[in-house]
Length: 266
Ligand code: ZN
Image (cartoon, rainbow, N blue to C red; front, side, top):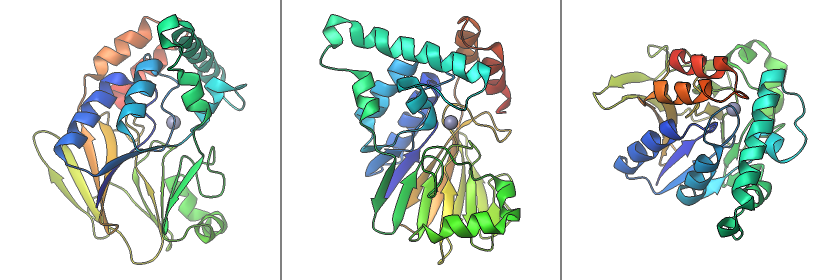
């Protein structure tokens, strides 16, 4: 059983297309999406349609919710992007030919969690599925980690921070940028790069990283493949981020910074 898990597409259709093509070559059984399909990026409608068509499970992210309801807790730039995103979705839904194909309805019906045996899938954390961040530095906050681990059967897959890696109960954060740590080893290929982690026999939280706005210093799109519930392969795929960046620069309601950061993966 092979499952691809994507998250935080953020309206970046160039990254999403390349990732979906890479997933197709991996011959997975299903694709799950952990939310934030929209927000920040220039192609929210295209991304919602592509995710809807490709994914078996799609969860609601805080940006998806912000685009549907009153945005709350976002900075000024993010909120402006969310309002612009909402206008795009509503304009799509108003077209007569799209009357039976409402993107806002689709987003509005997304669940916040998905459970499958002892696997849990959320956008943020098991404690606050929509909007709690679990950052690598939270390993120095054992109380927070303990509380969240109590809510997890075995493995919890999450996104939201845009920083891929595995949290163990130690607590420890195993990062793809530190391939010498733990049981991990790195494998680079011409079509992409891959980092495989054997999951611990105890509980773990796995952050699958971000397709459309990586923030770990690597601008390549990131996603994960769960194999037989035992190992996770983090994959990095190059995409034409300068195209997405130029599109963002051309839209007044999207800060130029949102385009610039894609080139750096920050
Ligand atoms: Zn996000």
